Structure formats: structure tokens, C-alpha cells
Amino acid sequence: MSREQIAQVSKPVLEQLHALPRWVVPLGTLALVAIGALAPLGLAVPALLVVFVFVAWIAYLSWPAVSSGGRLLRVIMLGLVAAVGVSRFLA
Image 1 (cartoon, rainbow, N blue to C red):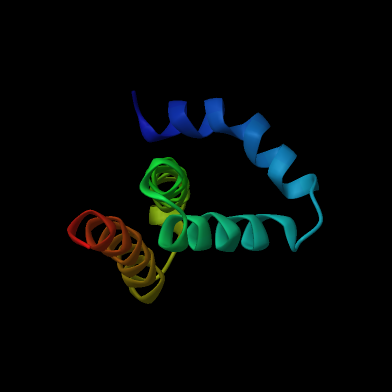
Image 2 (image 1 turned 90 degrees about the horizontal axis):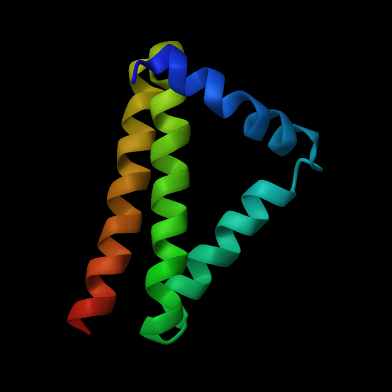
């Protein structure tokens, strides 16, 4: 599946997210990261997976349009979410 096809399939979801109040997505993401960091493993893993997939999806869609600094930030975000998940398994 090409990037254009994925963008076309993603368009309705992106439009719904855009229609939400501006604070909903960042606050929801922060809440899921907090659950991933603090909740029991049975809740933490799905929460972190949702955050990882969401950030990866947004990064994939926006990759051609962002600068190298924006790309680096997206890679760092994915790494941080993965690090929190790994640290939960090792703790």
C-alpha cells in the first residue's frame, strides 16, 4: 500500500481528530503515556501500544512534509515510548 493510499484511508480519521478541541489529542496521549508508565502491566502494554502506533502513523503520514528536525523529533518520540515499554518489562 502506498503512502497516498494510506493517506486517503486515513483522511476521515484525521478529519475527526482535527474536529476535536485542540487539547484532546495531546491530553489523551499524555494520559495513555501515564497509564503506560504507572499502571499494572496488563493496562500499561495496550496503552503504550496505542501511543506507539498513533505516533508512528502520524510520523509516517507527515514524513515528507516535515523538516529533518521534525523527523528527528518523531523518531525520538517513538524511541521514548519504546523505552518506557521496555523499562516496564525489565522492572
